[in-house]
Image 1: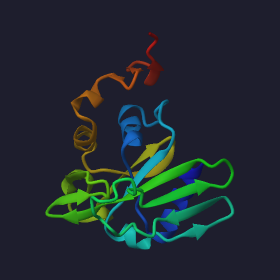
Image 2 (image 1 turned 90 degrees about the vertical axis):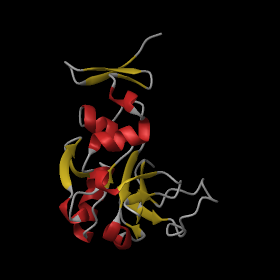
Image 3 (image 1 turned 90 degrees about the horizontal axis):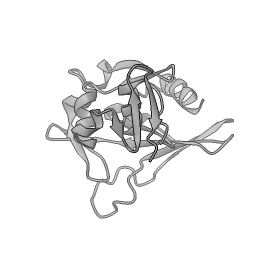
Length: 177
């Protein structure tokens, strides 16, 4: 519900949040949340970063980190650029800003990824969309490369993080030990 509301807000503001990290694994396999993931992870690049502001609505708040524009490696625990928080239940969306340097996109925690893996030619204006939990979201240009850079090739196995993905049912199951 929070993701749906934030995507609606983003559309009005001209912001293009891109699905990333654990949620991108879920998107890759079955376009659903991972059973072990407890938040939503989105990234912002280019002009979308400039358009996100603090917001206090009836259902949720958006809190932009006042230090979101400082990209140094000294404060590695301060890497979330903004957070969208539900007033109903406290669930949240982490938003990470990525800035460009020399063909790479960097986030505050020092991780980097080739710009072309996230953005198609023409930048964020040409981002593709897909459905995640039946919600229209923006997705990276090369999902496989984004996942491989972040998690390694083992992320594509049908066994990950103590779970097995049943290809026929398109569902994750906890491995019993």
